[in-house]
Amino acid sequence: MMIDLTEIDCFASSVYQSMCGYREHLHMYPELSYEEHETAAFVKTTLKEIGIPNIQSIGVTGVIVTIYGDGQDENDRCLAFRADLDALPIQEENEVSYKSRNDGIMHACGHDVHTSILLGLAEVLFRFKNQLKHPVKLIFQPGEEVNPGGANLIIDEGGLSNPKVSKMFALHVFPDFEFGHVGFREGLYMASSDELHVEITGKGGHGALLGQTINPIFMGAEFILASQNYVNSNSPDDVPSVINFGRFEALGSTNVVPESAKVKGTFRTMNEEWRELAKIELKSIAERISLKYGGNIKLNISKGYPFLKNDPILTKKARNIACERLGEEHVHDLDLRLTAEDFAFYSHLVPVCFFRLGVGNKSEGITHNVHHSRFDVDDNAMKTGLKLFYSIAFSLDF
Image (tube, rainbow, N blue to C red; front, side, top):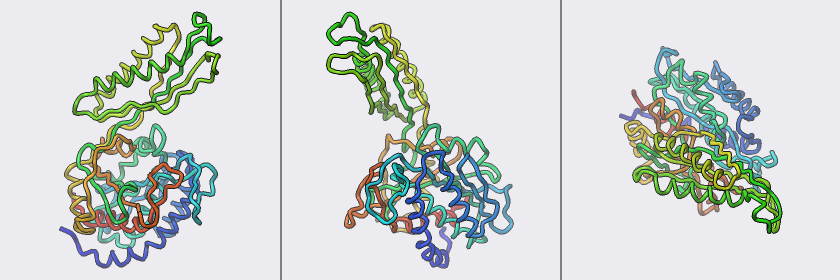
């Protein structure tokens, strides 16, 4: 049953301009993963200006704060909402007043939007804290973009305790949807992600002297094809999986066989048992090719994020709140994705709901996808994100 949020809605509308200001500042001064020092300082300063006490640092450059209602304390269970702080190593090509001032770094994945919405949520929750059914923890997390994932740092440093997180939420910008729209998926949603770093050592020499060289390019090519064939042929029918390669570096020439080569790729799936089995076989493939050619393939697998699973009951409740607050025509189902997100770590510890926030505006040319140098959002999307977050915070019961 939804509570009457009329007064809260009215106040929240006044927070919109503040969120726009937060977002412009954060977009102008992006920082890479685990280097978000100024971003964290901005978050702390903003929370202090709102009047929220007991702001804590966590995970090197993360920030965490809990908002309590009357009679609530750290012995109570709480809801948690997470935003990520880090940006990407991309040179921004947008010509806007809030264009990145930090050369070669850009908020091209919308984390500036996520953080601004969470700061707006802090202002709304603190203003109406005595209407909260439970404490609410706000987690401003570093390092979502880079292994091992900032979520690990938050977890390892006790970020889900005192008060204990019972349920957890996050949103992510989604340019495929126009602003004002959101998307949900119950159960499995996003894949695990492991990085493949391959160093190949052969024997360099003249390109015409085949018997005197061991070509690392041939070895790398065979490893790529054998790896793809293995994953495509052996992945369980009901387990989406992909292996792909995005970099092959071999600095030879038309008649020069290089001494070495490097290959980089990714392996993603949605089953942990198959994930580990496949990684063992990938190493075996590297060993067999090494023996065949007389060279050496060193495969380093950087373990990334697990698969993300949305709790079906919690996600259905959040979806129902979205339908009531935004209108059913603005709420959509999402497809499985083989992209990855370190929010997945939380999903293996507590019930979570990770949903998508539409940020596109075709009429204004805001259509580029995340990780693009011209990615941008319609700021009106933050109204939707904020509204859904505080509606969940004030309405959801355990």
